[in-house]
Image (cartoon, rainbow, N blue to C red; front, top):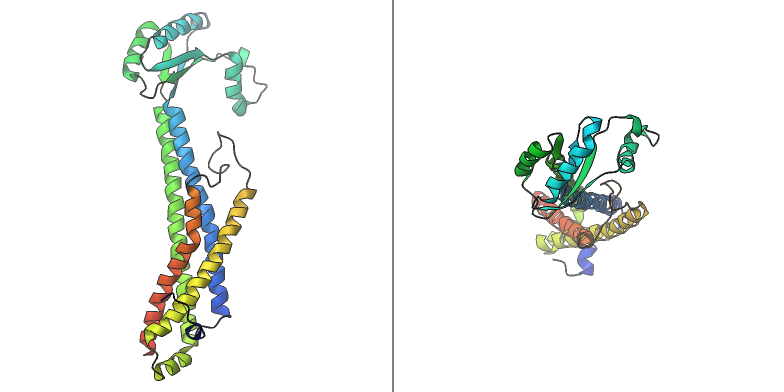
Length: 291
């Protein structure tokens, strides 16, 4: 089917509307697949990063009258330092709390005049600690302490990133379907335009498989060529996007890393395969109708 045959390839017009449509469709769809793939991979990285970072950290908040904050803080730190699964626990300074609030309220926030709670940053082991048992100990020794193990924050963030990753793969599937539809339309148009040539070939003894193979080869190669240029253009466009830092989100970390390049390199051959299947299907139906 894919063996080169110059005489058979003459059946398919080398230029014209169908050629331009196939090349442009493969180019555009491959370009979009690169970005959909980058979005999906970036969402996966963000989900893993958020899950790992939030899973190994907790926050303790102490809301007490001004005269009791220091006492409650020391009591809470004693409890935390003797809790299995806690690697480190330290009270944040005013400057650190100001840095946490400045993105929301500005750098000029008069933090000294506000009754802010004391925050304690907790670093956990990979296995974590017994949150229920820790809360019971804190209730007895530091009743003003409120433990936040980030569970209510971590799960929605990870779910959102996972759904965004799924959306990226769903977009790739839709793009592949659209590519198949466009190639099928182009193949139908090329076959219909060459109805008289096909009739003559049949008169001289050409089989439908011989005629179909010419269309399949030509359209698969067109899709492969267009997809290769579209993929290359998409990679160049991704390189123009500024790369984010380690704390970047999905939209500021659109890049291909590691094994993701394997998926990128598979885009052109997979586009050619989609065109092969779509053209084979279209050729079979049209040749059957012209019989």
